[in-house]
Image: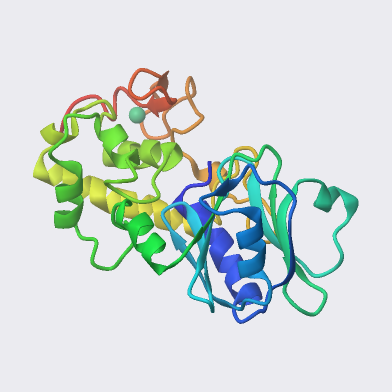
Length: 278
Ligand SMILES: [Zn+2]
């Protein structure tokens, strides 16, 4: 599932291609991705509307329209957002869920092979409700260690689960929770409330650092994720633990362990580097 760095990469790729463009002849090929909007209202709102802003919130692409609406697309596992300068080929059209002209013969396309993604169309009030349910953005300038500590404490959930809880923190999923905990040397199963202040500060630092490094590498492509220009990311080459169960720890050489016992997802860690509290 694309997490913060992947969606940020898509948004940075799309922004110069979409900002200021006027949408025309929108086509919705599938309706099962729609949330709280009918096909008719979506098409009517998009047609001849102008794109003002292209932004990210958590793991969602947020397209601000001149009408004041926001088109929110969450690409999830198999979705991709692309701009095609030419007519779509049959293959490109095959998994298109939504597409719209953006002038000059180019089209903006949301493709989704398995259609696990979602499309929301929100007015200002709907957006305020939507965004209020999501925790703070970890890369915001004012997201300091104090703020992070406030979000993470007060729960006996495992720290890994707390990191991935979108109401506590925006945009971190399984890949970067695993990576940040390894970098910080913290056992993913420890109750969040038991972390010491110094450990929280260390983790805050590493969450931000790993997200920034992954953005610089244009995200992690394990399976389906593609950037906004249709390419693979490259952070998969830099992963320390995620997907490396059974392989040697890059820091100490011990065999990395994978467990599903913390949150049902694959958690990979080094029992030696993350074994005991520091
Ligand atoms: Zn190790």
